[in-house]
Every structure is written in structure tokens, then in C-alpha cells.
Length: 273
Image 1: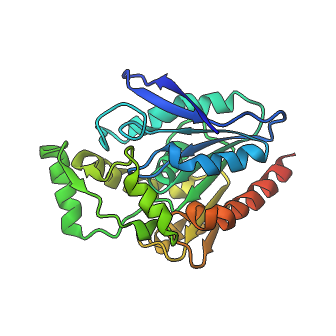
Image 2: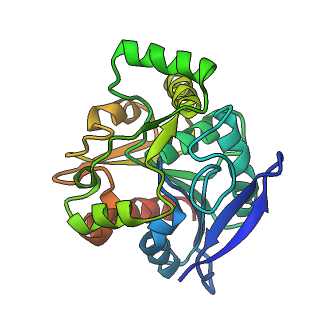
Image 3: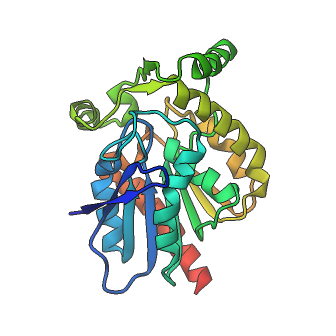
């Protein structure tokens, strides 16, 4: 089981960091970044899996989510997420062991932005259904930007269904029964997300960190074509997993997705040795 501690962001926001028992011999360090509306507690089995494989694993609750402080699902600037990551990433980089930043969905976008926008990058990236674009009509994009300026705190429902997360009904049931899950998103976050997606797509050619992209072929929240541009980047391996939905790590207990990640990381660590 994991334990939690609190970090303090530069603006005083309390950020919850979850950690799993440290291995006697550390093969690598990993930081997990969750997706929209959720929190690190939904990655208990993922963290335990990599801790058992010899990784020092931690996971951050982004501001406005889970056990961290801040207005729910709200940021004034997308850069706030990157500033929040800086403490746990720098802590991870302080170890001589190789480092892995693992981001899912919104967390995948955050992880990519962190690696691309001038900060000390980790050695490896694992990106699960990275939300670097969205199938949103043009008028909705304009509306999001206008609302982001005029009514930044206005919250709109995410309109997410449990069966979009995983084929396992228990995953969706647990998601909506979880008191820490946020089912609405503010206009401010929506507007910042759109800007960050565009900036990351413009920056992709500058990615130098080896990356694995995993995507469920049946993902309707972040459809697989969204991650296709990453496949053209040198050093990026993209794997589309047949039959899986948005949360590959929550399909059949995560066995297929986690095994894919294991194989890729093992190859990368062997190449570094």
C-alpha cells in the first residue's frame, strides 16, 4: 500500500504526493501523473506493480484534484501544473537511477509539456492516451476561450460515461462512487488546456526524450488518431492495444498495458546500462 505526504507549491497550494514502498535496490524512479477529474489513488495497482519491479514510484495529485488543494478542476495558467511537478521531478532526478515520467490523458499532456518546455527532463516518458488534441467543433473552442476570460470559474459537466474508461463495469462504478473524483471542469482549465495542446503539438519535433505511447484502440475519450503524430517523432514507440478503451491500465487489471510498458522500459534500461 502507498503512503501520502504534502508538498507546498510556490503559491502556497498544498499538493498531495503518494509513494509506494521503496525497493531495496532501485532500478529506476517513476512519477505518475493522473488524468482529468481523477487522482493518484486510482493508480494504487499501477504503483504497486512498478514498485514490485524495483522502481521507486510516486504519484502527484495535480492542484484542484484529489487530495491536493486549489479550486476544483481550475488553473489560471497551464504552467501551474508544470510548476507543481517540479518538486517531485527534481526529487526523482536527484537519484542516480534512471527516471520515468508516466502521464495518462491530461497527465500525458502535462508530462509532454514538462519535457518540451525548458525544464530538466526525465530519462524516459510513458504516455497513456496523451490528450494532445481533442475532437471539439470550432465554435466550442471559441466558446471555451471566451468563457475562460469572462467566466473562468464556470464549471461544465465532463459528460463522461463509465463504460468509456474500461470494459470492466466495476471501473466505471468505482469512478463515480469515488468522492475525490471531479465530474465537472471549469472554463479556465478548458481554455488553458486548448492552448497547451496547440503549443505541445507545435513543439513535438523538439522532443528528445525516448517515449512510449500506449493507446486503447477503442478509446472514445481521446481517440487513437490523436496520438498518431507522436509516432513520427524519432525515439517514440507507439503501441495501439486492440479492444482496450481509455484507461488501458484498468482493463483486465492492467495486465496487457503494464506488460507492454515493462517490456519497453526494460529495453530502455538495458540500453542505458
